[in-house]
Length: 321
Image (tube, rainbow, N blue to C red; front, side, top):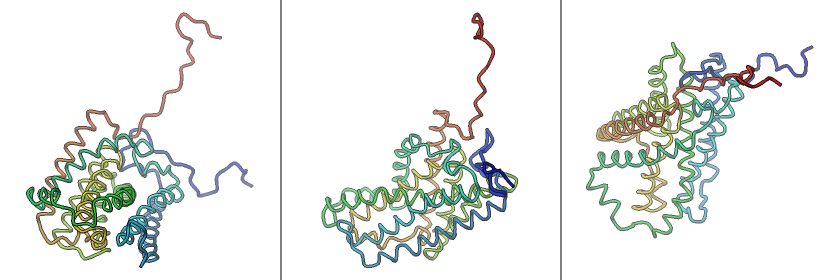
């Protein structure tokens, strides 16, 4: 009979990555069977949550949010997937859930905060290239079309954390689970391309994809996959994704009020080739900026070395006690 202190047969204890492991290899010590099971579980469970939770709020109009209630519920359902994904990886793969966040074993909040300003400015470049600088500037300075700036501001404050969590959930699934699951030859680029394809196809579930829209999503997926590996974590990808969605939601609120959020369309259905062109220009700027900032801060892109054991040699000139 096994002792009470021994782990259950076939159930892994916490698997910690070896020192010097890059982000895309943080799950490499897990068996491929458990990885496949984890990917399938993440896909099925997150789909169930995103599809079956929002309909429960049909017809619901919360105070302040009003007609944006359904949009808020959609965001909340997506955000709820973050702890679910972390729990599934911990339970099924047996590795620390924090390895899905970064090589440090947790989300590096200071680095995430440092990425927000570049992300916001580059997203404005993205919109300026797509809509034209004059048109975008006119939108910002035009009068409020919403019921009132105060109402729109209140809605924005309530939606902001939900937007961030929704973006984080997509990053954890695509740049986290999917990117770390591809381990053929431990190729960084194979993992990046595979998760970008998956990211694009997942957006096709919620609506039809056009060639310009699909290309835009692929550009985003490749760009965010590369910067995730380059910086050793999801922080830069979450910042860029959240900054873009926040700005778009703000403009929708300003020009159309809460009801404008309910009819927001997926980027995958965009008809214009200016969208992927804008993604390339703004993305190149963001990648260069963040890579340079990471280098200047000596941000680790691999797991840290194990601490050296303390020396037992007596200090020169001192007697051992």
